[in-house]
Image 1 (cartoon, helix red, strand yellow):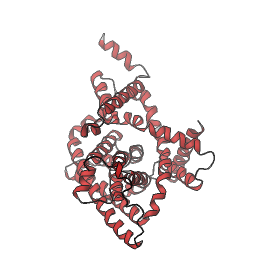
Image 2: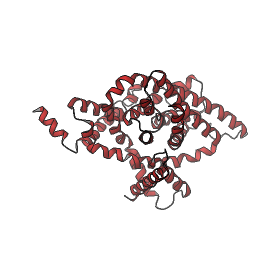
Image 3: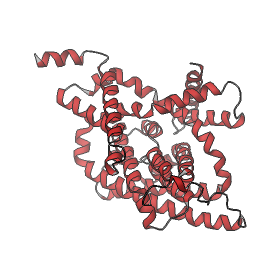
Image 4: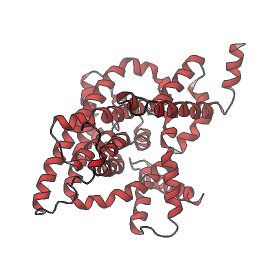
Length: 240
Length: 136
């Protein structure tokens, strides 16, 4: 009876889309409930919750990922136009560059290289195989663009998603504390640092710190999205 | 729908560029550069309002669009079991290193460039003190 029900579910093309939207709504609900509870609020990230629920549901029912993707892939396809859409917020924060163009671009490129090289070097030192290292490369790039980069490079999209989401979470949780520790007080530097290292999640956190921090984080993550696809293949050829 | 059509057209143009020139840059990112150029060239230009509205609508839903890729982790169980802990350590450590390094570098560079600009400090003010979190 139960097996029959699952076989029936697995045969429904709508299943993946239904599951994804349902899991996402559950994630939104949980993140609203956890608002203002510090670390819990950050961990109750809707994407993280929805992914965990989706994985749990597939693992529990034994429905293969291919079946799930029959309709869930439509959401995946929309990542392309959404990547193009990033041009709109970037065009709004672009005038900020005029404040200190050389400093901003230099710190941006150095920060991106540092984030990438340190991640790959540490994972390599811990014995991670090169195929997995490839998925780690775009970890500090906003996810739709990061997925585009691994698709071109031939790495695992799922591992990249995990790496990017954990990067964003850890940057949002630890960013302020790390910057305090190393004595960075300049609001522009604080915003840029979390924007470069922790993309949109870092930017969301920086917006809570203040308007200057938020604006510079937004500028940083937008420019990283534009620069990373050009710079990272060079790093890949050099490191892997 | 014309706004969405513009976004998709940019992506198609970008992907065509990528494939024709064998670039390592994803088509949608080239499309983003294309749209950015258009937006900067004619800020607030007619016909772009629809595109901006469509872009904002899509970006609001971005987190939902990312879920299927993440659920794909279910299909890389063996990779995760062997490489998972190392990846976690690498991600955590490199994020801390990158934030500290980028912050310190930017701090130093700004101090230098503010001095060069001879005291014209555009945005060091505390105008947004009210946004600060309690206890900070």
